[in-house]
Image (cartoon, rainbow, N blue to C red; front, side, top):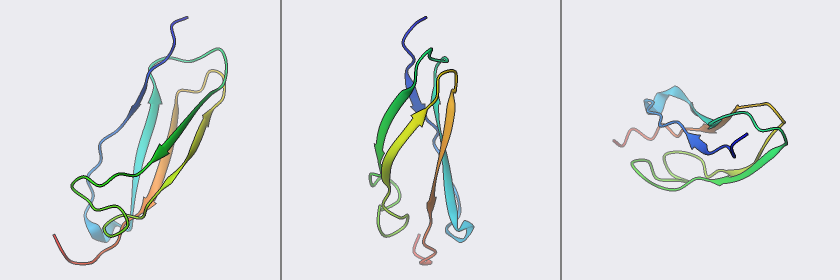
Length: 79
């Protein structure tokens, strides 16, 4: 089996949505557990202002190919 690669989905939500959820995926199932660290970074949204700062570790069990990360979105009416 080939070593899986990791990808994360791009998401767009209105600020009044309350949360934003990203899907983190492995390109193929792994025969053993896979662990990946993540952290938010400002882009079109400012981490800590528009969306909560987030960091942590995702652990994929053997054979598992997707996990989600949900962060709170701040509705500050500034676009």
